[in-house]
Image (cartoon, rainbow, N blue to C red):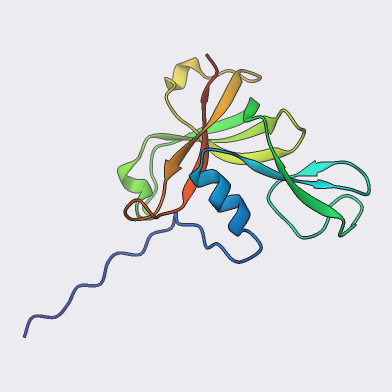
Length: 144
């Protein structure tokens, strides 16, 4: 009998839970969600059940504009974790969302020598899971 080969583990798949399910459902529809505090009014990302600024639990989901500015980046030339090795070189980045929060992401559809601090970016989504029912992850591309 031939042993079954287990699929290689993947390190790019999100693990949604009931709290983050609205975020992942919106991403599958092409929308980026943030959380905004009803107490202090500040937006934050990644999604949390409380405000990281004032600790209020009066926070709710809000659809973001999807606009951002490049804060910093690094071109990754080697990553041994599946499936990142098949994507190198890629741009790991931090962006400032128009609503205020900073977000870790990837910049796509841009030559590495075309990257500039402060350049305008807009969100797009890449499917991360297997098949059409997989989660979608926010990545950014140059605006315009």
